Amino acid sequence: MINTQQVRELFSLGHEIGAHTISHQMLTKIPLNEAKKEIFQSKSYLENLIGSSLVSFAYPYGAFNKTIINLVKEAGFYYGLTIKEALLKDKEIDWFELPRIGIDETVGPLQFRGRVSQSLEFYEALRGRR
Image 1 (tube, rainbow, N blue to C red):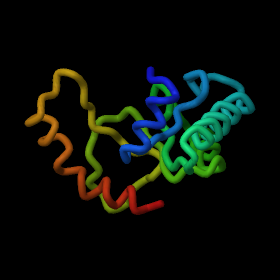
Image 2 (cartoon, rainbow, N blue to C red):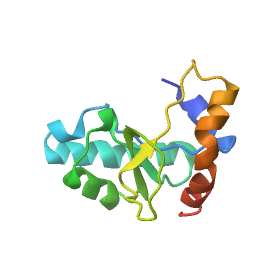
Image 3 (spheres, rainbow, N blue to C red):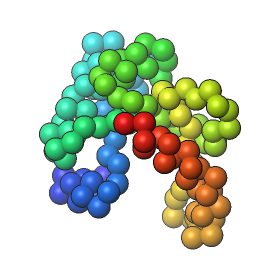
């Protein structure tokens, strides 16, 4: 967890800030109106905090379905991130079911470079999607 000043600082350094709900609930297990509130309020709060639009949403616990995806689209996000670990290979990309590349404290500089090097071109295309 980071505080509001750290969020602003990360954004000022060029990092993308994305939403992830207000209270980290599993969106597929709560009433639809609560899920909508979690998605929309997290976007609004962070946009007001950083003074810029958000484009990405990460599904808490990786839990999503078509209804949740539609809410994320309705909120104005451009893409959604899952917890699936994979690289994209197909030309047909589902922008609301994007996989990730796992990076944690056990990954050194060489492993980091190896994991992300294949994804840099895709990431640049993703950032250009705005």
